[in-house]
Length: 171
Image 1 (cartoon, rainbow, N blue to C red):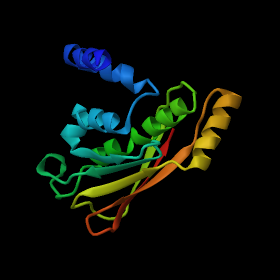
Image 2 (cartoon, one colour):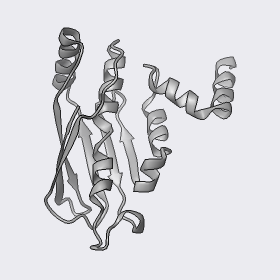
Image 3 (cartoon, helix red, strand yellow):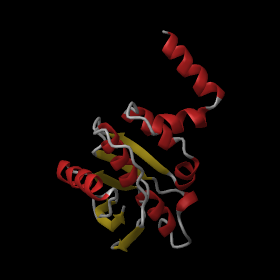
């Protein structure tokens, strides 16, 4: 009971400090991460919504909501919003996966490449995945070289399940 009270007090007194501390902890729960990301102002402004996060952080489903605030004069979603929706998720997933394996490190995106296949004129669904094999490869490279660099691929589907974008993120 005391732990819950202390946690609630720290969230109320300084929520940013609490969330940053929690983010760097292996005790972070998927629902806490989802809440933190959905409250992050750049996601709110770009209409990026985290729909679900798997218990082991290997899967994150994201929706980029088509709205007045993120569409351009051609009535398609701005490319910058699309890039913002691709940018942080693989780093976040890898960080949490490695923390759960006992490895403390940070990941950053080095580059993002977006191939525009079709105009995005509806909500866009992005399903980020890190396989066990990919996680094992990251862990081995971190243990051997103390750093990791690699590409992850993602497809963005519109509301009719048409592929609108193909992206790749270098971590």
